[in-house]
Length: 119
Image: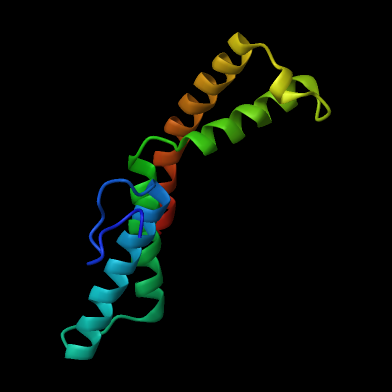
């Protein structure tokens, strides 16, 4: 396992997406234990909402991943220059500007997902 230790504890190199899945899985596991022990009566909808809220909450509180920034920058580039435009041929200054813009857009938009996930 390159992103976690053998006992399942993250070593800090996992991506926000992996941590979001881990958070959701932890919440689901806790809820299922509560159900099995008779300490709670969670519905499937309750469990799904908890998993989504924790997972999306994790994503909304972390900086956007470089791959997401690049994908958003490419989308901006193609919106400005057409779908046939060659992203790799873009000027370095233009790429940096579009990546900075994309990073700012994602950082501003991601927190808006948390209330949606919470219901």
